Length: 61
Image 1: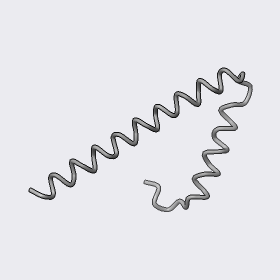
Image 2: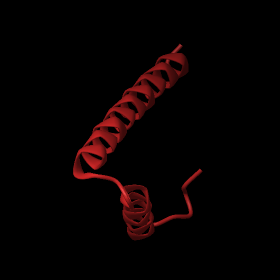
Image 3: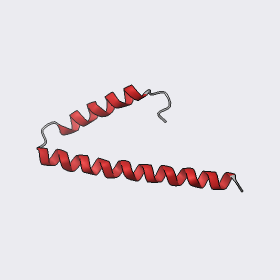
């Protein structure tokens, strides 16, 4: 899905997205939003690892 993006472009897009999300929010609201996205990122990482392990297991059969 993101094969055509380089790391710099992804970082810039993420920073712009974060700035847009934070607009008009209090510090507490920004902190809560940051915590939420940390959980989302951790969950995505867990899913990616599990998917990779399943793929490796299926290929070795």
